[in-house]
Amino acid sequence: MVPIGHYLVLAGTLFAIGAAGVVSRRNAIVALMSIEIMLNAAILAFLAFARLHGDLRGHAMAFFVMAVAAAEAAVGLAIVVAVFRRRATVNLDELRELKG
Image (cartoon, rainbow, N blue to C red; front, top):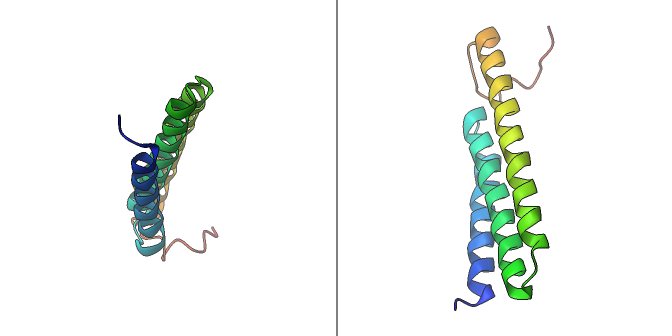
């Protein structure tokens, strides 16, 4: 059996990679993918603690986070596509002022 510390180190590493991607990249699609990596890190932590305690509430919470991540991806991608059609760019620096 793998100790919980290994799962948490992996979850922390995934979260750090996602946070670095959000902060350092200027592409909106890469930022959305980085947010998805951060949500997956949270899911991994929930499942690790659920396995440690033998409780199913962590699995339910992981399922809820997956549903939120799917909705976030769908809405975020729709917004990125709409902005790309209007502005012809997905660079976040150029989209700071979204005035008409």
